[in-house]
Amino acid sequence: MKRSRTLRLALLAASPVALTACGPEYIDPPPQPGSLEYASVQACYDADDMGDWECDHAYAQARGLAPAFASEAACEAVYGDEACEDFDGWNYRFIPKTKAFATPYGYGTSRVSPFGSIRPIYGQSLAGFDARGRRVVEVDPPRQEVPRASRGGFGNSGSSRGGWGG
Amino acid sequence: MQRRPLVPRLHWRQQAEQHGFAFHTIDGAPYWDERACYVFTLEQIERDIEDATQEIHAMALDLVDAVCGSERLMERLHVPRDYRDWIARSWRRRDPHLYGRIDLAYDGQGPAKLYEFNYDTPTALFEAAYFQWLWLEDRIADGALPNGADQYNGLQEALIEAFGAMARERRLRTPLHFAAHAGHAEDGGTVDYLRDCAHQAGIATHRLDVEAIGLGDDGRTFADDRGRAITSLFKLYPYEFMFEDAFGPALVHDAMQLVEPPWKALLSNKGALALLWERHRGHPNLLDCRIDDAPCEALAAGWVRKPFFSREGANIAAVTPSGERLATAGPYADGPQVRQAWHPLPHFDGGHPLIGSWVVGDRACGMGIREDDGPITMNTSRFVPHAIVG
Image 1 (cartoon, rainbow over the protein chains, first blue to last red):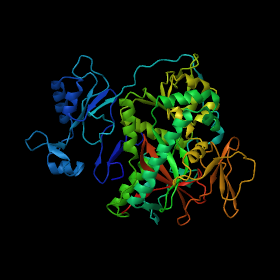
Image 2 (tube, chains in turn yellow, red):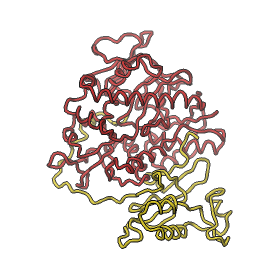
Image 3 (cartoon, rainbow over the protein chains, first blue to last red):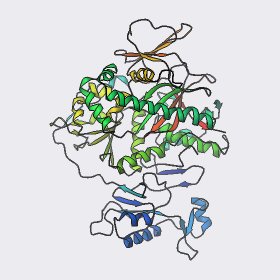
Image 4 (cartoon, each protein chain N blue to C red):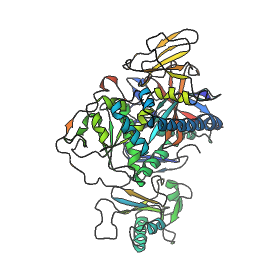
């Protein structure tokens, strides 16, 4: 295929949209600043941001937050063929397959970021994850203030010429 | 390659507005135009567009390397003296770059010919990367295009991947500010879209107008509209204008990282087309092009004269091989010029398509087509989607 498999817009669209080539429509919230995201539990173990126990615990919590359906057919009607799994082997709760998950910065320590939260990632492509399956979603870091700035020193040369793009 | 008429989707305007495509109609005239599409074979795309683009991009980087090592070539490109070392430093550090568009004339047969690079401030990105993709999915679903139809468009995945790679490799300072000209819908839309891609790659961002950028009293620290330091800036604002602006000289302290990086300034300059021809004379994807030493003399038949820095088809003069004269108006009349061999765009049922072939990071990965009624593509052109069938 010569085209992107999945597209979504996090900020531009009127409401969050995510689309998959020739497939179902997934709605996934945009990445939350202050999160560490992992493509799998193994990626979480490998990253060593937290202990293995914390990885397991965060993953289990994230799966628990995935949308649940009473039957596999009902889940597949939303997420597509083969896209769902039995939640716990008891055959009464089905969720979209969840491998990837997010945790807040500092999860498992006494300094957990107030920004991120644990959540499942089921509908999105793993674009932006590094080769080891980890992605940092930054919080606006504290920044240097520039007290006495003068303005208007950019933009004058082009104003008579309409758009600047080409 | 064919131009196939289609009945537009009934809901396309509503879809455009829902997805933030504010400039689908510009000054009352349609810009997004799905009354037709261009259809290519996979072989045409891979051999004639993708491979050619990859090769042209490699020649372009090789040229940047040569110019950054040569005061004489900097002079021939009219790069302002105060910025030459700064540009060369950015190349020696290999400051990361995001994207560029290569404009090609192509009629379905024979090699595509390079018209020009848009390597500093390319637009027409959202419609190529995103809205064109939605169109294809809808047209396969409604049966207007066959099931196996595809599109040469891995743009959005490549953009998110490129932003992600820059952040991961710590080659980008964050938060990344995004700036465009206030009140220009198309430029603003392009920047908003790129910011969305950066956000999806996990990068903290802030959007502002170019005019709102401030400079601290140390003469080197740039400030955003909230009075905070800008350490990295994506700017949809050309280098040649920055160089003329009051704050331009402060850039050389490198307190603010720029995307596209300074070395890209060398390729947004049409003099680069002439240097490329000198280095690769006769290359099948290049047109004969020379720096015009006598810009006041009448142009000979079979040549096109373009200013080094014109955009959107402005200030172009041409004399066809049969002696017909063509010219477009514009604000870029002053300054150095190149002469390029006349090589008109093909016509397909009255449309003159210009291929915009995209490079993200260093990879050719997508295409958008703009069509004009006349042979020179201007800012009045329409975006016409494409599909790959067979």
